[in-house]
Amino acid sequence: MLDKILICALIEARSCERFKRLSEGLDDEYLSQFYRRFMESEAGHYRTFIDLARQYLPEEKVWQRWEEWLQYEAGVMLSLDVRGDRMH
Image (cartoon, rainbow, N blue to C red):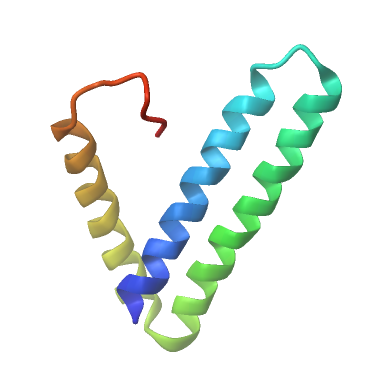
């Protein structure tokens, strides 16, 4: 259960990062705010999943496993060739 919840949190966290980048790189104020609101929403989803995991499991275990997933993800990213059709 913990891994499933944390994978959901990771997906939401990465979406948050993408929308943040989009919101910062636009000259159009309307679109910038549009993507900023998506970023804020995704950040809330990420936190919801982390909080859910912490409700059912010890906080230390949640954060330890979270760090393991982040390290695993970093390793996967390093193993991939850089391509223009990938967004991460």
